[in-house]
Image (cartoon, rainbow, N blue to C red; front, side):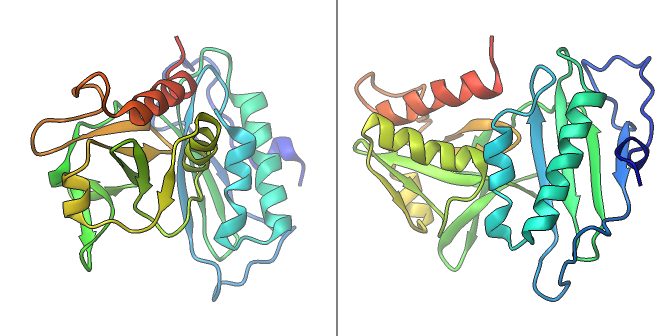
Length: 241
């Protein structure tokens, strides 16, 4: 099947700067790669589109590797994503590319309108066995990694950093000379931090307001320096001027 026949047509008369939720690109057959349904869990990702491009595209593709997808399937998904970017988006396109891969070899790529980043507080934290594993908004988990800063050191409440923006934070921390510890955190550890934030594929840096109202932007000038610098870096990627 030719690449240009795999995707359903999108109405090109529509305003691509705000992609409608009904604009869907669907890929229904992946005969070029075998997936073991017993070992590969479904993957659902939401990647922000900025100026007709997917920020951190190569890093995002690499982030599929730790998920257990076979290399041929990852390469296959890459080719379809590149086709979508080249043929369905223009320089004014803004939105979210939703990628769903299930163990039965179906891949669905849909384009949705960009959402406004949610306002998060410690009440949005998801706790399992006294460990923070993410955040939820209106009962639905928001994909991403919860970070916090305490006395100039950064902490990520996870076993491993996998997503593109999370690994970017890791690289930025090393470049800027900030200590980063990757290990599960308790709710009290986050609540006592100088700043807390979510790093999301869809929204980039999202502040988490602590119980006393603190965020990286609402603290003393000499506090939460790493968090403030990371926010500035991620905002340039996800929300360029």
